[in-house]
Image (cartoon, rainbow, N blue to C red; front, top):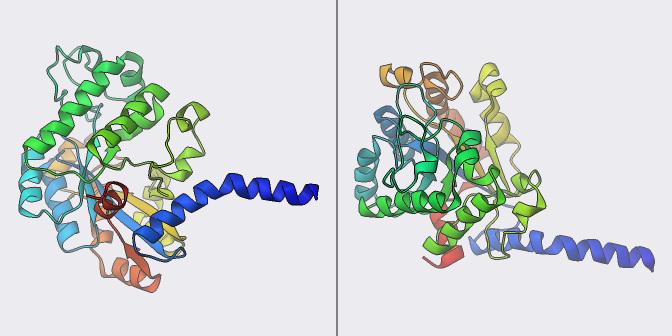
Length: 310
């Protein structure tokens, strides 16, 4: 009897998470054991090369989602594409850092509104630790709202929110709460994965609501994967994908003079890395694996419709 009660207690504790994921899969119109995947291109707007490679990967490859860094210089180009192609699934890569050496950007809000977010040169800090060390919570919200509102002004209708370099999900519970709050306020799902939740303190987890959408897992190549060949890594991920809603995070650009200059001191996630991402996700081999493994591509727009009915 005691053993039976223990098993029932464990199942009761597990059921909300399990049912939430099954509910998402089923509401998207699939069976519980289906493998659903978003192939997501980061960093749109950072450079012309990033934009045109990502656009090609979305229009002729299998990339079916992306996110835009609103403070970056090439946003008008990707905004024009978004307006001309409203079917494209584009979210906002909420940006509070400026990590490259020779291309820098500041906040979207006026610098006198968000002084805690900028360094001595007026740019956003180049890493999440310095951002979190200096950030005033109210100013974080001001800046993020400025980025969202600018997207709408440019005719972009974002389908989700995510976070550049993870600053909004690792810095503090208070900053994480702002991230969640803005998603609810603007009726956009925010990118959170169940695998990620396993690594954060309860002070973060307690801020989630039962209605928040949780993705099963995010896959992203590491420097070790780059050293051994990104195509091998992606083939391994796709060949071993499990059921549920999952994301494959990539960066697509051309290994040209522009990207080489931008990433001159940044071999990880630099020009060569991004060319390899582009090459694989526009390849016949990638399509063959998706078909063989019966992987179904979905978008953030579908999740937004499930979550908010829009």
